[in-house]
Every structure is written in C-alpha cells, then in structure tokens.
Amino acid sequence: MRIALITPYGREHRNGNWHTAARWARFLREAGHTVRTQVEWDGRPADLMLALHARRSFASIRAFAERFPTRPLLLTLTGTDLYRDIHEDPDARQALELAHRLIVLQERGVDELPAHLAARTRVIYQSAPDIARLPSPAHTFEVLVIGHLRAEKDPFRAALATAYLPEHSQIQVTHLGSALSEEMAETAELAQRKLPRWHWASEVPHKAVLKRLARARLMVISSVMEGGANVICEALAADVPVLASRMSGNIGMLGEDYPGYFPVGDERQLAVLMSMAETDSGFYSDLLAHARRRRGLMRPEQEASRLRQAVAEFEQGPD
Image 1: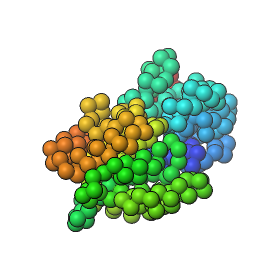
Image 2 (image 1 turned 180 degrees about the vertical axis):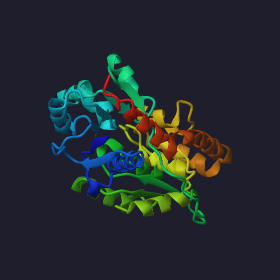
Image 3 (image 1 turned 90 degrees about the vertical axis):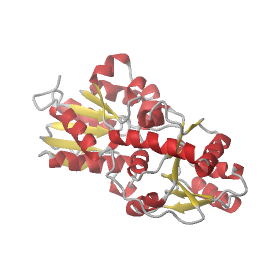
C-alpha cells in the first residue's frame, strides 16, 4: 500500500513523535509498503493515511478525508491529544470521528475516549531494541531525566527533589533535553546554580542519550501529561528502572501495581523513592523485576507486528 505518514514534528525536532514516525515508517517499509513521511500532507494520492496527533495534524486529516472519504485513515493519539485536546479542541474531536481506526500507545489510553470509539481503537506499545549495559560510575548513583524542557513534562520536579535527599546520598541527577523557551532555559540555569546534585546537559544526540542510559541506575519521568513515553521503553530496554509520576499515561506503560510511582508534582515523595532506590536493595530489585516484566510489551517485534496488523485490517478497505 501507498501510505502517507503524517507527523507534526520533522526530523529537526528529534522528539518522541519524530522517533515514533521514523520507526513506524521503517516497520511498514519492511512489510512491503511504500511510505512517505511528511509534516503536512502534500495532496499526492495514498491508499492509507497514518497520522500522529489529532490537533496538530488536523489539516492533513481533514484534507485526506475530504478527498478520499472511503480510504482508511488511522490516527495515533499522543499525550496532549488524550489528556487535553480531545476534551477541549473541536478540531481534535472532529479528527477522532474522521478516523477509521484510532491508535493509543498504552493500555489506559482508551479510557479517555468516547465509549462509541472503543471498538475502533487499538493499543500499540512503542518499543526500543535491547541496550547493552555499561559499567555505572563509581561513587555516584546516576539518575537521568530525558526530554525537552516543557510544561507537560514538569521538567524540574527531579531537580527540586534533590534538595530533600540525605546529605550522605551519592545521587546525581542529569537532565538530557533542550529548553523549548527562554524562560525554561533561564530556570534550568538557575536550578544548576542552586542545586548541586542536578545538572542540565541540554540537547544531546540520541546515541549519546542511549549510552548514558546504559550506565545509569535510575530514570525519572515526572510528566503531568503523557500518552506513552518513548523514554520509558528505552529505559526498560537498558534494564534501568523508572520512578514515574502516578498519572494515566505512565500507569498504562508500567502497570497499575508498579512500585515506583509518586504523586504528580510531589518532589518530597520523589526524593523518598530516589533515596530508597539508592539505599534499599530490596526496593531496587522490586523496581527492576516489575520493569523487566513490562519490557516484554515493548519489544520491536511486538510493536512492528501490532502496527502491521492495524494496517492489514484495511487492505481490503475500511470498516
């Protein structure tokens, strides 16, 4: 099939949406499809459109639906889609109705959708290949936060948590990701000066991020809004347990019974969990065991199979 894959962020952004689009394009090409990845649909005929992000890709979604109303249109919902836009934005809500198939990136995503769309929805967990471990730094318990500095990620929660760590702690937290506003950059610079256990590395090439993960002991994801984080897949691929804000998108990735949750916005409880991970081997082993069980959902062969099946449902036409 000729597939138009629409992502609102191009290669230059190097964010989660771009990595998802690039990976999915590869999976579909390996299955024999022809894939054009675009930020906005160029109007060229396609047998199927696969769009990421309801609101940001709406112009392409609407144009394709108007020109080819019977051709399948698959829509993948991101965190801002699920937890904000489809509840507030008329374009995002219309995109849901135009799509023949909806894709969510973790098992709790379907809970946010209108009941009549549940049967139209598929879950496709994102994935990462195994990342070989590297030796962890001596005399340091290295914790990573990975992602651009933007409000949805609550990016300074781990930085604030370092102020509540015991004096003898060897935890050092490094944030890998660029600031998406001058205000965020200024806050990061201030945090570095005030919080000696926290370091902002700014933008780092993806290969370097994975190398840092391979030697890290822990990753923190503190988002207030998350559709199904790529960085969780990568952490689990590197055998790195995660401390995560207890919100729907993270629960859908890590499971209801995962022991590493802290309340959204609660740096004191995050500090408690970070300290436990450093000093309590039983707690750390429990985190690791749970993470390894969830890892099975996020392997590339599983993601590729689910994506190809979602497309194959329409090889004879939409429902």
